[in-house]
Each structure stands twice: as structure tokens, then as C-alpha cells.
Length: 363
Ligand SMILES: Cc1cc2nc3c(=O)[nH]c(=O)nc-3n(C[C@H](O)[C@H](O)[C@H](O)COP(=O)(O)OP(=O)(O)OC[C@H]3O[C@@H](n4cnc5c(N)ncnc54)[C@H](O)[C@@H]3O)c2cc1C
Image (cartoon, rainbow, N blue to C red):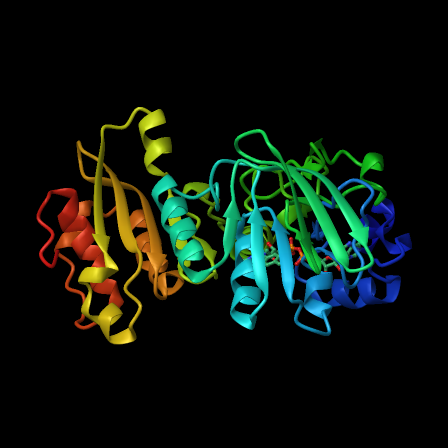
């Protein structure tokens, strides 16, 4: 293990693992000799020359060290990180405006989820501008000015005390000596096989730097299990990346697994959709949080569940059920026949399954 670290040059990297720490780690990992796991956190994209600082132009790092709640904030990008911070700071009392280049917020989610979240945000008072491309970000004495082209092609300018740049992240694989190895990169991300092996014998990669892997902690964790199990010579099960839960902790929460309705249609499925609103769920009424819905995307032929999409109260807790059923190859009918406790938010899941066949009960 030590020999691999030195070959890769990681011990010389300024923030990197110190040799002594590597020795300790190697001793602890004694049962897996001659193996190195590559885990590197990604760089955060910024906007051209506007380097983040501690006050005006922020990324997800600097925003955590803010000493005061800003009066106003422009959030550039409406992926999970953008909408989560928009939602948090809105609840702190900050006047928040989201600018998103694509036509909808949370653009990787099902289109109906995006529409519902935008509606909820606007109702709460979060301003949202989609189809809007940022052209220039300028720091001034009072904060920051953001110039952008709106969906109609008009140039607009917005001023705020702070700006959060949440437009994605880049793999941090430069200057760590990978070029001296057989590890192959794809647009900076590390290519691996289903057991997380790189092309360099004995070197595995897991987490955010893996090509094609979603940038999620629970995925990195499972990739770690696969890699270590395989490295230890035990039977390892490759990850099914179609069954990865996505959770966005904004208000209302968003969660999903599998194909969106559009993806299912584009993949040639004969799609049947069932949707059940939390407005018809008693626990949501008890909680006073009845916005949102559960949506099941299925294939008509065998009732295969292709995707499940949720927006509403505590849906980040509810998505695991959908992942489990999909993993066990359960059908929409299986969900219909599974007794869920009352009163719980989870009752919305079998109701959405009933809705696939047009027989939801509490609508
Ligand atoms: C704002 C934000 C919110 C998020 N929220 C969620 C969420 O709610 N749920 C979720 O699942 N995921 C979330 N993520 C994503 C999640 O944090 C990552 O997917 C996860 O941390 C990836 O794990 P990793 O081990 O690949 O990288 P990291 O957790 O970044 O760990 C990499 C480690 O490698 C070290 N390192 C880097 N270079 C070297 C070197 N040369 N030598 C030695 N060590 C080095 C780093 O210091 C770091 O400790 C969020 C990310 C962000 C930015």
C-alpha cells in the first residue's frame, strides 16, 4: 500500500496524506495488502476570474463560514446544492433569487417535480429565474452585481449582498501523479470497472472522482464496500447505478430513484404513471404540510417500477422503500398490496401505485 502512495506522488501533495499517516493507515488496512483507494474531493466550479471570498462571492465552502446572515443572496444554479442553500437562507430571512440557465429548477429531477418545487419556492417568496444565463458577476462596495440574459433574451442586472455559485464541481485529479500510472481518466474523472478497479493493478477508486458515478456520499460509501470486498478477495456485488436514491433537503423536500417519465418514454417504455398528492394524506394534514406528491413511473407490460419521484414532507425518509422494492424487482401491484401503517406519510406510496391503474382511494 505504501509503495502505491509514493508511486502516485500523493505524499508530496501539499494538503495530502502525510507519509506517517499513510503508514498508520496501511497498518490498519493490513488485511488488504498492496491496495490503494483513491478518494479525492472535487474542485468547486467558480465563475471565470471571480474567485470566491469569505463575504460576497461564495461557493458551498465559504457559505458555511458566513459570520452574519446576508440581507440578500443571488444563487447561481439550481441543482441540489443551489436549492438547498436557497431554501435555508430564505428561512433565515435572506431575500433569495435563484438564477438557473436550464429551463427548470432541479433539472435532473422529473419535470413535474421541478414545476412543483418552483411553484412552492415562488409561493414562499423565493424568486426564481429559469432559462437565464449569467454573463457577468461584479464585486462592488455594497456586494455583488449579476448580469444575465433572461429567458426572453433580455439583459437583466441584479444586485445583492452575496452571491452563491452553485454550478457544479470538477474532479481534483490533476498533479497527484496519476499520469505516471496506468489509471485512465475520462474528462478528469477516473475510469473504473464494476469492482471499482482502475487500470493500474491494485489501485481502486471510489466516490466523487469516479467517472459516471453520481456525486453522493451514500454512493461513495457503497463503492467503498464493493472495492474493499473485492480487494479482500471476497464476493463483491457491483453497484446498480439505476437504483441510487437522490435526496434534496430543501423545503419541500425532493427525492427520487430511477428513470424520470421523460427518460422512460425516451428509452422506449410503454409508460404508465400514477400520482398521489399529499393533500389526500392524513399524516400530511396532521403535520400541516400538504404540498407535493408521490409519482410512480412504470412499464405497462409487467408493472415494472422504472422510477419513483417524490416532493413533499419528509420524502427523503420515504424514498428508501422505493429503492428496496426496485432492487427486489417488486411491481406496482406489489406496492398496492403492501399494507402501510396509518396514519403515515408512507401511505402515499401504495396510493400512487393504485393511481397507476386509476384506482387511488383517497383522492
Ligand atoms: C454542499 C454539499 C452538500 C452535499 N450534500 C450531500 C447530501 O446531502 N447527501 C449526499 O449523499 N451527498 C452530498 N454531497 C456530496 C458528498 O459530500 C460527496 O459525494 C462525498 O463527500 C464524496 O465522498 P468522497 O470520499 O469521494 O470525497 P470527499 O468526501 O471530498 O473526501 C475526499 C478526501 O480526500 C482528501 N484528499 C484530497 N486530495 C488528497 C490527496 N492528494 N491526498 C490525500 N488526501 C486527499 C480530502 O481532504 C478529503 O478528505 C454534498 C456535497 C456538497 C458540496
